[in-house]
Image (cartoon, rainbow, N blue to C red; front, side):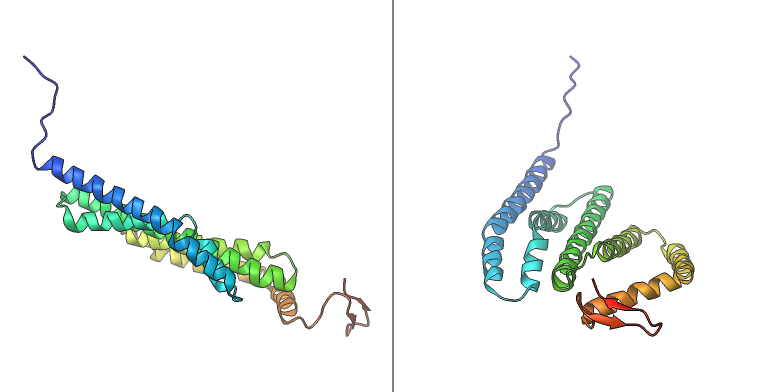
Length: 207
């Protein structure tokens, strides 16, 4: 009789079970760490007067389990003998996921830091700086991922350099005014309600 069952070699089933156990254990451990350690760290951060620990704790939310999952994949590479093709796929998956998680983490960290140290301190909207920092971090992460996958990023860096120089020259006056305004806001030399008089003779109260 013809059968459609595909026999599984005896050595493949234990390997599969070991992989599943390692991944499940890594995810469960990540959940435990997230609920216990992260919550205690969050409470500890709330007790301190510094802002950086609060920013760091808030930025880590959602990444702890993913990082433990990646650690589980790395352990699998050490303990379980995989074929060359599967080994390459797993390594690339770990690298890309690690880079992606790092990019998202630093982007969130930058946005929260800008909110705390610009929005709260200067009391002015900083959406342009948040977007600029996010774009820069995403771009760096994209280039790092391409380099990790073996794609040459030299032409991209050259194009970005030439394009950035062209944009900087085209927006020279705008960027000059932007950074001058940012310097005034950050140094607080002029605040709303101050009476100012310009060299041109114009004067008035800052709103």
